[in-house]
Image 1 (cartoon, rainbow, N blue to C red):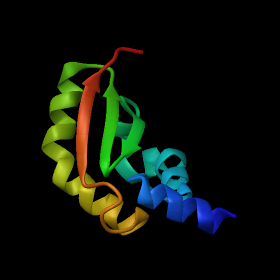
Image 2: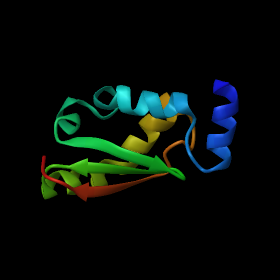
Image 3: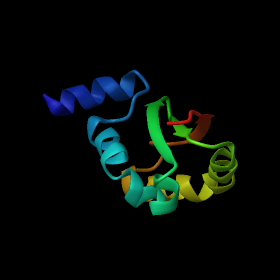
Image 4: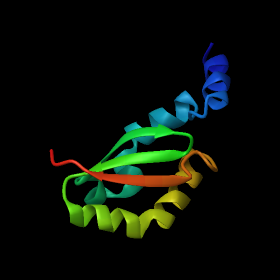
Length: 92
């Protein structure tokens, strides 16, 4: 069943359930404690990860770190699961 859902998800442009679970469950490990304290993943569709940050300065920081974060995501989640990051400022 899980394999079938994974194929359907990929066909619809969504990540596999395993990749999505890892992204949300291991967020702080993937991005580091400092970033994890100020940013949280909101959604992932068609390779674009939407991240909410609590201050504009953290939005700038994530944009600056994007290429490094994409490399980490490729390594831990699989190549191309996250191809881009969109950052939104949403105070907690």
